[in-house]
Image 1 (tube, one colour):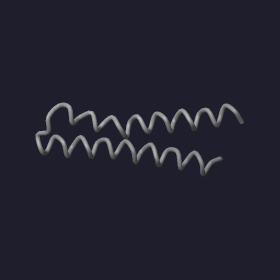
Image 2 (tube, rainbow, N blue to C red; image 1 turned 90 degrees about the vertical axis):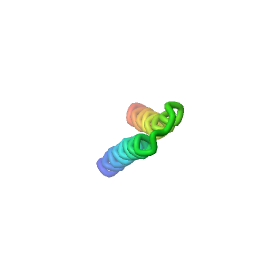
Image 3 (tube, rainbow, N blue to C red; image 1 turned 30 degrees about the horizontal axis):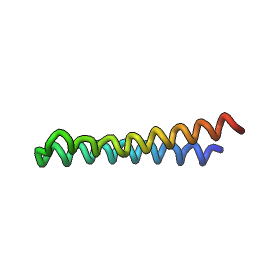
Image 4 (cartoon, helix red, strand yellow; image 1 turned 90 degrees about the horizontal axis):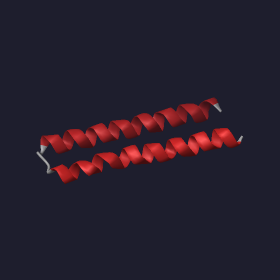
Length: 60
């Protein structure tokens, strides 16, 4: 259980870092506004991962 929680936090932190990295790259190249939708992809994956993790905790 403890290892699973650490893994969950590590994946969440990695996805948040990836979102910040994409945001920084897009600002660096002066990308158009529509390209900033790419930043939401890791955030949405993180939300889905969170819901699956919480659902697994509730159903135990």
